Length: 425
Ligand code: AMP
Ligand code: GLY
Image 1: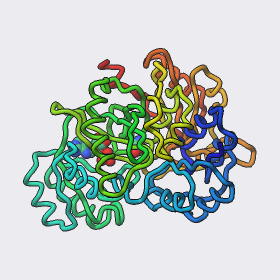
Image 2: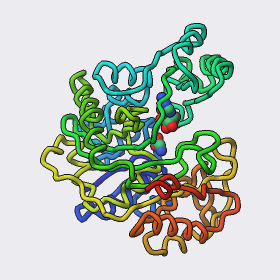
Image 3: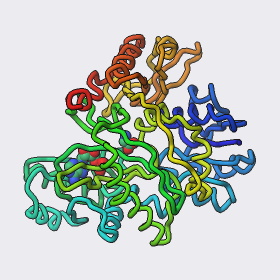
């Protein structure tokens, strides 16, 4: 099989790494890919925003399957264009992608299909938004309607601050994405992410993980795209997974199909485990980054038949995915300054040594190579140091031992990834 992977980050590096292990793979292409991905795939320098260019590449290369990593090309309609060209595609249509592209759409959709989620209102008028705060106790949860790279949610305890934020959102704090905002009830509980493949009709459980969104240790500081993740998530016991599949993921998949926009790809449910059961915080329409990195470490089966079945409507005939018992963790190394301004171009040493350690794989989220062939930083989140081990403790120790091999003074990581799981379970 010849497969094209769209994207260039750590998630796509992990997907390419896993697909490369398939006995039925004949060639992997990536667009645009990265220096690290080019060690496993042929990269084509086409940005994810060039939908026509990507379709043309898939057609010219006669690929059997396209796997789309990031949300932006999905929300722009890349999967629709590929399917119109007769190409099997892992990734949902533009209509189905509204589940992530618009929080207002998503919240109305959950309400229509009785999917448990927080009480909410949608506003583009500041006065109405401020008045709506009366209905809630603090803390107040404000969300940009549109895509904001994981940063479009603000939670504040102070009413005055909430009102200032409402003005900031509506005057374009997150550009067009926050010209409409959603205000919702604060849900207390522990968060967990559950993944499920969906071929338009059938859903198949595809793992659970927890991540750390805040930049600072102890889950402090501003939100990021994610500073680390681990799987399995100790809170995701079989009963919780079953409840989430029945009350949340299946109704979402069925609801999208019933509304004429069947979902083909991976549903990523961000859930809050509350005393009344799991409730939706948000849905994403693609693998999590960096959650994908730990899932790929733990899936025992060849992933390719599952990706293909998702794209072609064949999941009903597939057995459940098998998982290694070994937990996996990924720690993000980011450039100093992230998630605010940071510099590119610093040299990173020691990654090859880290990769040689048992149970360790360093996925590269934002690296390049300089004229001397050295690894350099080329993004905010730069490395995903991923490790598995007999227990979560071993996996954590291995990941941090690998980080200690890496020589990169211009980068940092959180030293407490998986603290909650280590402490309470
Ligand atoms: P989202 O981008 O919607 O996943 O929100 C980012 C983060 O904000 C989530 O991972 C939660 O930690 C937090 N969050 C969002 N909505 C709520 C809510 N209604 N109650 C409590 N925390 C929330
Ligand atoms: N790590 C969270 C996300 O991919 O949205």
